[in-house]
View 1 (cartoon, helix red, strand yellow):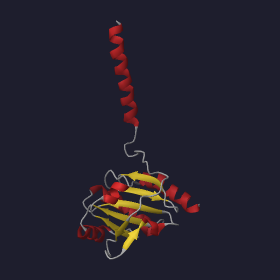
View 2 (cartoon, rainbow, N blue to C red; view 1 turned 180 degrees about the horizontal axis):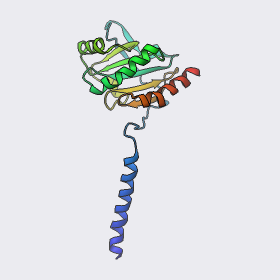
View 3 (tube, rainbow, N blue to C red; view 1 turned 45 degrees about the vertical axis):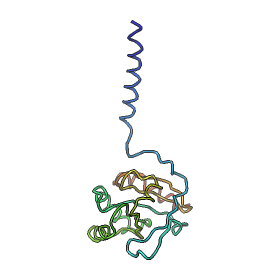
View 4 (cartoon, rainbow, N blue to C red; view 1 turned 90 degrees about the vertical axis):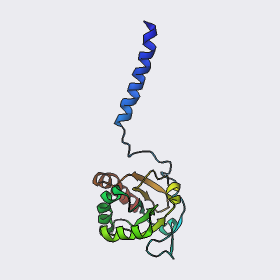
Length: 175
């Protein structure tokens, strides 16, 4: 009889772990970058490649860093929310065009609208790697001191925007 209790106990523990895992939101992967300085970068601007932009240019402001690409279907889903934020001038949005061709990116922005204060080009994906990007789109809320305060994995949704991103932006803008 005891011979069956050990495998049954192990099975019960595995089922419990599986049950807990199924209740978790896969979009809420904890980021080791939260409350740490945003990784440094200096990249050419998409529309003016002779000009360089750095995350240091945003010190003193609360801002969003949105990683996107013209080949990304989910980027199209979140794009209306970014356009809305830009239109309402809630927060500056910096676009990091990830592993994309500049001409494709420019054509995409012309077609769907350009919500970005500045867009920079990360053609080889190096900066995306520094930010721990799993895939596009991803968006970071960065505070006045240059620290990452929130990471949205996947497209911004109305729920994420109203429930997490906008309240955090407003709180950070007050301080």
